[in-house]
Each structure stands twice: as C-alpha cells, then as structure tokens.
Amino acid sequence: MEPKLAADGCKCNWHTYGSWVLKAILEDDLMGYLEGSETRPTHPSLLQGDGDGWTPQTDEE
Image 1 (spheres, rainbow, N blue to C red):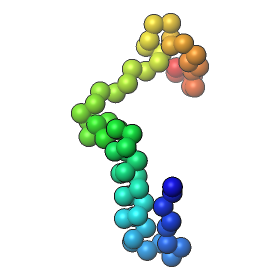
Image 2: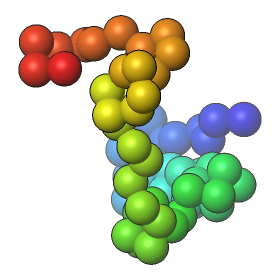
Image 3: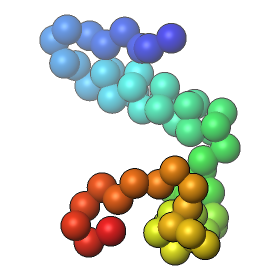
Image 4: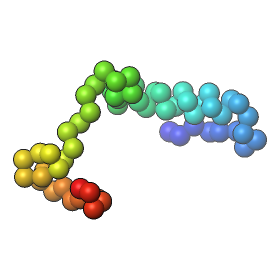
C-alpha cells in the first residue's frame, strides 16, 4: 500500500515516504546494494551469448 502524503507538502511527507521506501528496500533484501556491500550484477552484454532475451537499449550496448 502506498503512503498517503500531505497535500501541503509538509516536512512529514519525507518521513512518511522515506519510511515506506526503506521498508520496501529491506523487504526486498536490497540494502546491501545501497550500502555497497553487495557486488554489482553482471551486465547482460558480458554474459555468454549476450544473455538470453537481452536487447541492447543504447548504441553503446
């Protein structure tokens, strides 16, 4: 469920939204990526066969 933010944009909005985002990050076990303790996932273009089902999104890829 998404947080309900105050229409006047009060400072409590950041507390409400920030708490909601932090909870989602913790539930999905993503904190290590934000803290830098998890390694970055391998880019699909570096995988054998360019990764099954991977389509380049930019000219550089």
